[in-house]
Image (tube, rainbow, N blue to C red):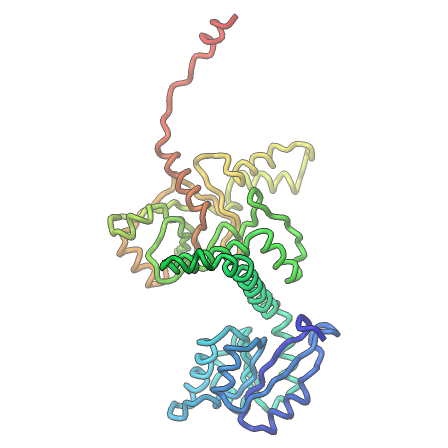
Length: 385
């Protein structure tokens, strides 16, 4: 069986008999496909298990609530401590297999499962299959594999062969930048296409620098711990309504605390625009299927054919949005911070480069444009031969 077809599970229990039973039942069990099977390792010591999770490659961990070295903690805190210890070392789906399920039931998510140990090992296998079917373990595995392969190849092919150039300079930061940027670019096309194929992409979308996937517009979620930046997409909860706006104040003014007011361009949902409604009406009741004017009017918006607007395509938790440069609003920095703290505003994404710069440049052009009277064409034409 190849490494690609194995799912690695670490079963942690301080009772060796329980470990033996788990290995005997779970090892070599078929999961989603006939050639996909479990490989089970066991560990009786929690601290050693943490070391193995950090240094090894496991797809799941099954363990008891009370394994961690937290005897002095209250029982209801033990599960949290165990989970935090794992999260500090790696990302991995966790299955609590315990006699104290009530102590960790509140921690349960699609990737943190809680089973009472009386439910038995068949139930553990069922949960493993359920988690694999979400696709996230495969995403995690292939992403780590991709980064490892790119790092390996870059270090051997470029860094090792050019080490004399690096070793002669005290600026070792440059090497860190080179590696980080190379890894980042490796996740662009065609690297991202290769990764998508491994993940079973069914859309077969071909992307290039001239024809990009919508997700390339965004950084989701925004980088934590930094001040608000131009291009941040803000979701506003207004009663039962959700609205969206984009920060267009220059980032330098915010960082240097020169902005007394933060300026936002408000957004309209694409489905609420006249162009979209006309297109849907025509699509549902086409009196003349050859008439493309409703498609063309919609495409003007989608391809940013009007200076007043900027289209943001939908991905993840961001709907299709039309940024309207005529519809702007302001907040003082402290007002903005308070609304974020009160969860009335939430920064859900940041526009990545060069889309952030494009949005700001269009905003600047729109308000700095200069109108002039129409030229008398008849006078010009009259001078022609």
